[in-house]
Length: 110
Length: 114
Image (cartoon, rainbow over all chains, first blue to last red; front, side):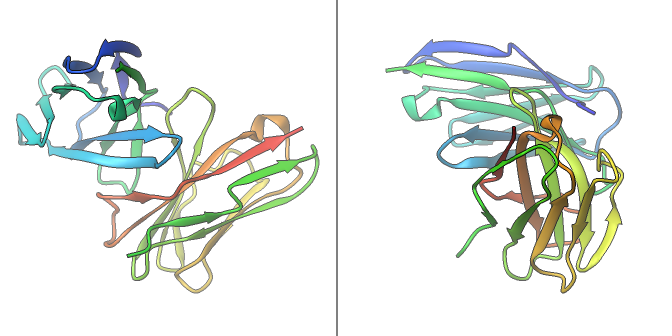
């Protein structure tokens, strides 16, 4: 069953702008991960944030985690056309599986 | 190094046919996972192997779905008597350690059942 729920589910922005998307989940987690998927490269792991962390950066990516609200956000700064993709959050409960949300479609217009 | 590979990349089957989807994980990875991704949805867990042992098959949607990893490396997902609702992308992922916190995904096999 789907665990994460991303919001917004579709986003269209101009190149250079920032893109923010949110994810909520239902139960306690070990960590939360964000993935990118496009037709050219399949599903690619972007960043992992553990349940005891509140914020994490990787290049132009910034992820926050609020365990009290059971939510996370992904910020992509200075977006590029190559960032056009679907973005999924996935929660890991330590039971050997990832539970993915429905995904956000992001279109970056050159 | 080589990533996770899957074959075939595309498969068209007539309803009622059996299909076999192959996954070659990253060499040395202990854990292997299969996910099913319907159009417009996120991947959903099907099954998990630790080496050759299938430790979790709770996500398999019916007894028409069967997966194996007999030597702890290559895995095959078999779907018997395919139905139209089986149309989806089937993703394989592998992880170096037990538990699979960080998973590396293959490109997927897109299955279309007519």
